[in-house]
Length: 461
Ligand code: SF4
Image (cartoon, rainbow, N blue to C red; front, side, top):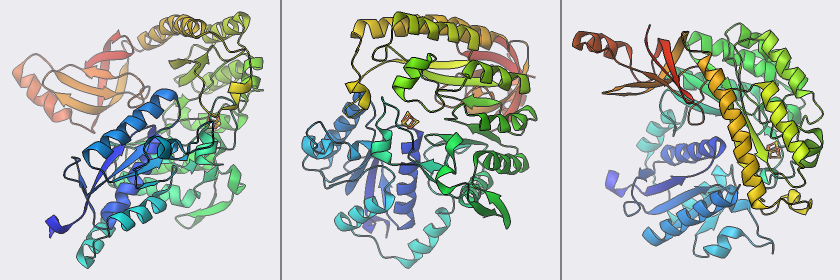
């Protein structure tokens, strides 16, 4: 029977939000009895989920489509690049790769499935339908078994001048809170130990639904960030799991979740994409919460939760950024003492309104500012990491090898932050006991002995 089952190859590119889209499509494929293939020649058709944000991502996606066409020939394209048009108003993908079978935008699993059915008819096997209906409870996950992204909304109501995501993913559409909590519960029951809440703007969760009341286990609960975090915290504590919040904007309402962090119910970790500090640059960027006093807010958060770790991203060399505005940003960094920070030199994105702003800076100036930014921030991050030497940290193990284990503390989100490297003891008997305590997806307590760049080193406590 298995040889008769149609096989689909899948290439997934882009951010965690795109990864969740891939998981939804793969879940649907499996639920309908399609098999997946790890090779192009073993597949009857290939789906490429693309990213269309910055130029490098566009090129990577176009190359991946080209490779799939050359190696397999039957290709369906989905994702952000699928929704992108060039300056002449033509579809970017169709123009470069006219032989693709179909192109959809992001978050379009039903549309993708329609194209799959058309080009690779669905297998009709009632046994398969039944068997896979169970798998579809919590779906196919592309992350390791012990952590999962939990997407709470799609799209964005803001119009940041450097960003084209709203034109690709549309306005904010929040998932009702009951549905999100049910998915979280199913993930936790399947063994997930860390839920990573993602969206384009987590603080705006429920705005589009006017914070409508939904039902969680029969109780009325509003579809709103604080209520969601509270529900997830309660669920996670029953499964000894972590909840981590990403893409939170510094609105006053965020203050409401800080007590939950201080009480240890949610990880004291906030991923807040500030992008800049100078009010005039933030206005030109049309950033959400640009009128907020961010330094005051950070201080207030730390007063409520002294262990809070803040991650952020910034853009250096935005059009019109003066040297004085850039220095203001460096002063902000010194005062804010953020823990984890990424910085991009500004690069224009096709279709972004910032392209019409004027005052574009030469590439060398943008690169030089980014380098100065990183030099300042790296010293700050190193100091922040060193503060944890000598402490005991709860660590979630991601990998175990012959030379030790690699895990993460509450301060480290997967893929983007540092690691905690746990050395095995030198004696053979010690190693045996060590192996029993240190497994992938297990929590363990580590005494931190040293800092190395963004990472920590330690031994089992
Ligand atoms: S908040 Fe701004 S940067 Fe983020 S997705 Fe929305 S428009 Fe883009």
